Length: 379
Image 1 (cartoon, one colour):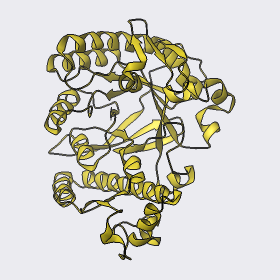
Image 2 (cartoon, helix red, strand yellow):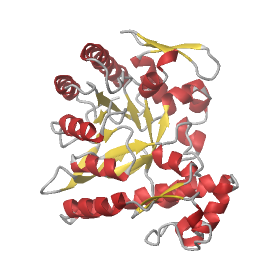
Image 3 (spheres, one colour):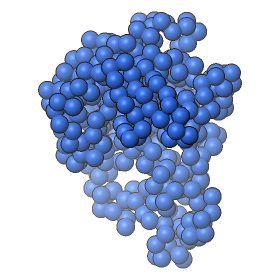
Image 4 (cartoon, helix red, strand yellow):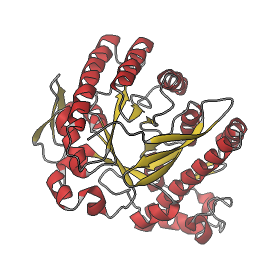
C-alpha cells in the first residue's frame, strides 16, 4: 500500500466563498464533487435497489463497519469479493469506522488507549476493536475509502473529556495509517483521518494540525451535527475547514439537509452523508424546492399533482401526491421505496445544480435563492 498518489483534482473555485468543484479518483470510478453519499448501513440503502441508485446517478455510497463486522462478518464479505461482489453495487463504497456507533451506543462500550470494548446490540456478545483491526476489516470489505477509528464526543462535553478523546483519536489515527500502509498490495482503498476536538477552538485547531501532519489521502471532519445549535455548527465547520489543504478531498460526516449541505459547500467541503433523507422518507416527508411536505396530511388526499412539479425523477413523473398519501396511510412498503427514491433524487439534483453554479460563478446567488425558497416551507 502506498499513499503517494493524489486522489483529488480541483476543477472550479468560487471567487467569493471556499466552494469548489472537483473529481475524486477512486478504485471503482470517478466521483464528481460536491457530492452527497446515500447511507447504506448494511451494504444497502434502505428501501432502494442498487439499480435505482445508479439510475439517479450516484457514484459512491456509505456502509457501516460496525454493523457489517457483527453481521454477516468480514469473512463472508471477503469470500463474496468484498462489498462490491457481495452487494452487486458497482460504484464506490466509503465505510465509516464504527466510531459514531461507539459514541451513540455509549452504554454498550468502554474506551481505552488500546481500543474499544463493546457489547453487540444484536446478541450481547463482547468484542474488542483497535485502530489496526478496523483498518483490516475495511480492507477485507475492499472499501474504496476507509475511515480511521475515532472517538466522537457530544455537544456539552467538558474540555477535559474532549481533550482525552482527542488524544486517543490522534493516536489511533497514527496507528491506523501505519496499518493501512502495511495492507496487502492488492488493496487499493484510501484512508481518511478525522478532525475531532468537540466544540473547543483550541482542540479543533490541535486536531487539524495533527491530521495535516499525518498526510492521509483525504480528510474528514467529525463531531458536528451531534446536538449543537445551527450557529455553533456553522462556526466549528468553518474553523475545522479553513486550514485544510486544497489538494485533498474534504468530508463532513453526518449532514444531509439542504441548509447544512449548502453551509458545508460554502466552506469548501466536497462530500457528505446522512441517514436523514431516507429516514424522513420512511416517515412520509418529501423534499421539494419549496420546503419539505408531510404526505400524511389531509390536504394531499385529492391532490393529483406531483410531489414537486420541478423535479424530473420517476416518482414525480409517474405518481401523484394523492396516491403517495394512500400508500403511506396504508403502510405499504412501496411508500418507503418511492419516498426514498424521490428524496435521494432531489438531493442528487441539488448537487448537480450546486456544481453548475460554482462552475459559472453564481454559487452565492444560488445558495441565497435556494435557501429563501426552501426555508419558506411547504408545510
